[in-house]
Length: 128
Image 1 (cartoon, rainbow, N blue to C red):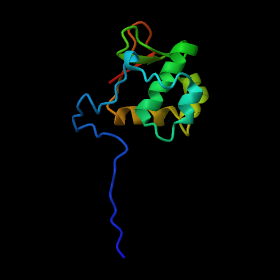
Image 2 (cartoon, rainbow, N blue to C red):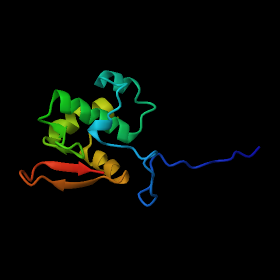
Image 3 (cartoon, one colour):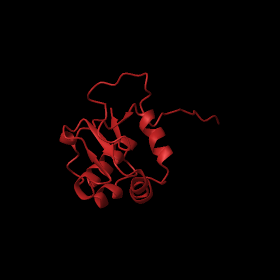
């Protein structure tokens, strides 16, 4: 008996243009309201995609520890102020690792771009 194998990508490839209905929005204004706490978010992580988990993480930090990471004033990007604390303390709460490089690689796979803050070159700004 032959088995049919199908390949599914867990992300939308960069070269494929996504419409606004299927595109993971990363705006603070469109935060998912059903998950009001980090605990609720982590309970549903099995079904969550990387962008959703990342959004929950930044929402949590923006509310509880904005000295580590927060959304920009206009909500179009998020800024990481303390990479060490972000990766060691918060990444393992949402992902199966604490590796900053792996997190960056995933952001890049989903089409996020990074830059440095004009005010402080230690601050990394991510936008989609």
